[in-house]
Length: 168
Image (cartoon, rainbow, N blue to C red; front, side, top):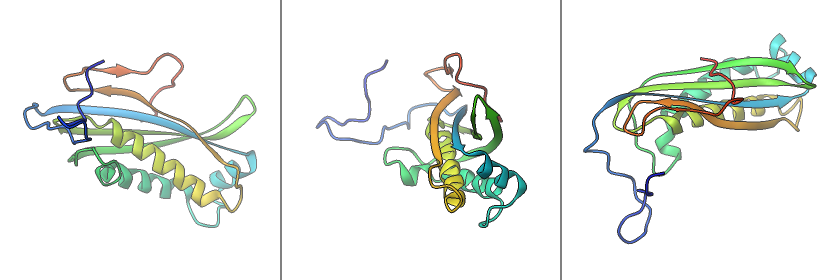
């Protein structure tokens, strides 16, 4: 692992200077899951949540969050994203059910988009919780992680086996 570069000569946090880096095509995909009971999932699928179309609202929220990551995470650079896609997959497996979320973010920049993908998943998951909390308070958000990233000096990354595929 490289030395930490987020500290200045005085040991204080700083935003890394990327002005000397070349622009490169960069892509990152992150995923997470929202666990809920069968009744809540069925209501989402049937459009019976009082606040509206849960996945449509969560999709817009995730895209907006990815675009605003630098406003939320202090040392992130503002980036001109060229694409953000959020995908959802309802599931029922091994006595668990919920919605898997994946966010893929693309840009041609001097720094990567991992944080944007992770932020998109996180806010989409929080939106699902917010829209469904009147039906079920113990919904759980779990397993938010980076699945893949490509582009840039540090090369490509793919999560270890079992991390699951990127849905988008």
